[in-house]
Image (tube, rainbow, N blue to C red; front, side):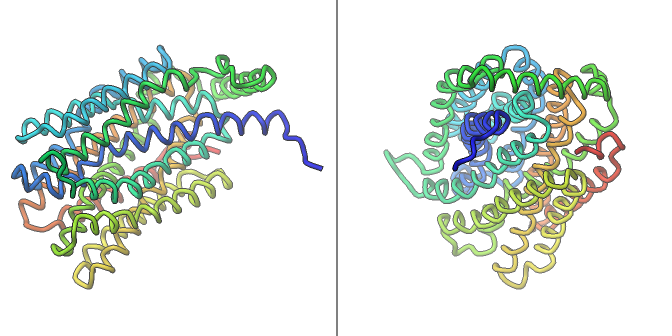
Length: 430
């Protein structure tokens, strides 16, 4: 006899399958439009005469625009609701991402990347906040981990597709231009669909039964009340809280390593052997992200099982630093050895996401949560400018990527140390 699921099991499962596939699809498209420039660079830099410093600055300036609009955007979403605001984000960034195909000078490249950051700002923290309004504390880490697993999946799918598009020459238009145009279209289409699919709050969920909806509203209200009793935060107090500031610092150094490696990985792999075609580079770059996908799942599951967040995150950051350090020390042996260490580094860096983003929602509520998560992500993503720019600048100054990779090693270790120093309220989160 088949056991009938309880009200709790039925509701949690229904919410998960209603929201997560769509949100993951949105994040795959978002991240692809953010990082496809790393694949376009394999041809674009040569066609436009961009140096590694120009490319690194342009790739990273995205995060200056992101930084400017991150907190205001998330606070607006908390007021107007996810349906409208996320739709606006998708449509505007899709249009601007497509315009990247028209750049011909460094300044045009900088400008379009800056406004792409402005357009996409508040998408990620908005989704993190949105999940917190739908998921119980015990379900949030799993939801965030599943959502973040979109990142390596994006690269697994995006690397071979993007490098394939580099090889086309339709209508005498370069492949890298088609890459930006074709990969921008899904964002606009999904942006139009979003208001019709997403639901702002559980109280508006007509796809839940009355019993399911009432149970979810009650359990979320009960949890919110407990967090307020534990430590009541105003928005300003959340911004100035020592743990929130430390988490922003952790994320800054971590993201330096994340984007410094991610936005240069295709170029790094190509530099290992000039004989590799762009398509072969695409398949090789996909390999580390396949293993990162598995690592994110295993680390996220174990973090949920044990309730421990801080050391799971620290372990990932240190693993990322060790992998990058070894890629420098043993790069002379073979491309296989280099790829092994790049894979180890990507696994460590990505595996930290699930447990890290489970921390803020565990002691922040309502508007304070929206603002603080946006601040952590905003300050942290400034590292998305510093990491790639440092990689390009150091390469052009020294003629080697080794100095830039060692800089990223230092950033990841700094993130780990700062997280170890996290105060009691920010580390005992279960």
